[in-house]
Image (cartoon, rainbow, N blue to C red):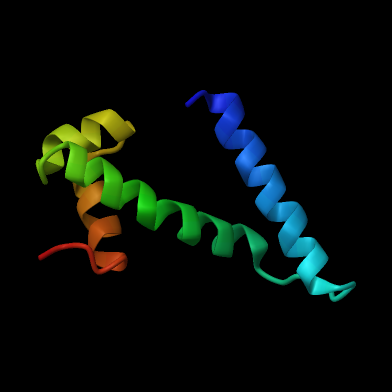
Length: 78
């Protein structure tokens, strides 16, 4: 799957989101979008990294402590 394909999926989802709003103005979209994308991203990367936080942090381009904080925020630490 290419970066372009992912971008197309996001665009289509956002168009659907605005359609569903039926003219109502959105609020807090940036934070909402980051949260709904971040959690599955972390879940998949952690699974592929076999729960190795150092490896996952490297793949994501994050500091390991930042990754750990995000895992806690999303209740993904066991």
